[in-house]
Image (cartoon, rainbow, N blue to C red; front, top):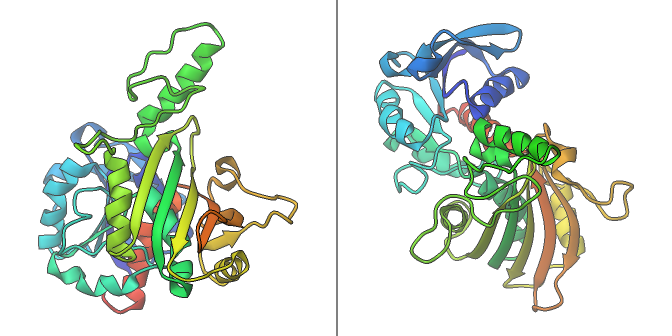
Amino acid sequence: MGYKVAVVGATGNVGREILNTLHEREFPVDEIYALASQRSVGREVSFGDKDVKVKNLEDFDFTGIDFVFSSPGAKVSAKFAPKAAAAGAVVIDNTSHFRMDPEVPLVVPEVNPEALKDFAKKNIIANPNCSTIQMVVALKPLHDIAPIKRVVVSTYQSVSGSGKDAMDELFAQTRGVYVNEVPAPEVYSKQIAFNVIPQIDVFMDDRMTKEEWKMVVETKKILDPKIKVCASCVRVPVFVGHAEMVNVEFEEEITAAQAKKAWNETEGVTLIDLETEIEYVTPSEIAGEDDVFISRVREDITVENGLNFWCAADNLRKGAALNAVQIAEKMIEMKLK
């Protein structure tokens, strides 16, 4: 049995990656629709070896559509996701708009697939933030061994998380440095080329950025509301791939050896040990890969039960498109659709 699938925001970085992932994973698609704003109507996007013409989201009829993969931006999704859901489609939304809605499941299939059973309340499932996804995938097998008390995470996030314009800005500024051009920040508040920016999204009243807040509240909703999270999110001059240095404090003893064994047995995780030829991974080495990569695992001797590890993943794949497609696959597996 095949499904009718619509991709909203099909011309963006994530939308294109969703189309690519659906084809690569041989998702059972009978019909595929690429949707975007009026200015993109008539453009073509690739679905395998097939070119799909973009249709206008504004007047698209979602009747008969089985799955909608939505990544057009929070304001657009707020308007059109409920419309698609009311027409009977299951909407898997990659924006921030629905994530903290108590009636919308926030799902990482390797971590909390049971939450999918509540999808019918609104016919909408939220895809978590990219930095949250890779961290909770890494944390879940550890939390099953010893309950996690506190997480301190520093992220190093690529510009692709801000979209194509941000990638273009990094490219233009990098080139400009070599010809003595003064960088002109537009997407970001400060120069991104040869620099790091300790701000992702807007600042909130408590001086956290919204990206940091997302990591706190989403981890609690997905993994365990008792876990305390301290996040510091930094934009770095990398095109694709997010990395995180994670410090975890547990309620019970857990060794680095136990953690490594658990990760080696976890689907969707690749452990790179210091004793291997690679030693550790960087974002440029794992761009295009599906797994969450873990390396530099060591025990933290400054607390009673602590571990440190380095975590890297392709933010356009596991951090967005792949996780969304895996949600749909899991729904089919669970006979929810």
